[in-house]
Length: 114
Length: 115
Image (cartoon, rainbow over all chains, first blue to last red; front, top):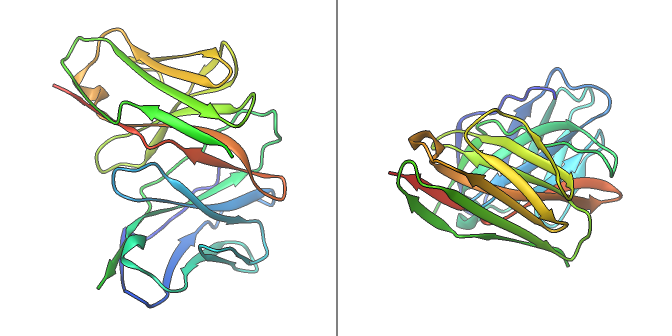
């Protein structure tokens, strides 16, 4: 799996957009960018993923640069409940019968300030 | 809908005692199942994965073992716990998240403290 680099921590004011960067300069053509988050003492939660096009769902938006070497997760209107560790993971898609696992780094600790 | 159950939520065990953590999933069949561990201040480490009943693959040699006696049941065990086994243990299964792509759903975790 390609290695990712994320800032250790970030602060964001409540109600503002939180922009979390991730560098993945060694990503290969068949690897997707996944984002998960982990609220304290809970299991990680899937947020969003993408290959090369920007993606948006009810939780967040994912912006992937044209060269795919970096991406940004955007939480459009951060709330206090968004305080969590956010993990950026790069992983090739595996077919349904395959066995695999995600490699989680230390992620970014996002703190939403009231 | 698919759900994943993990218990107990917290556990304090003495060194040398046995361990059994159970994970079950509902609403899916023949899932890929995973056990992860998160030590304090560190990322998640994949311990075991299973693609079917009786099929276990170990990612990291250690004091732990896993078993899958039923399609939707995954068990993490140890015969004799070590202090270094303390951590947050998470069970996960892999399923579709969008347009045929796969993502992972995690259980709520078990916080194990070995004393």
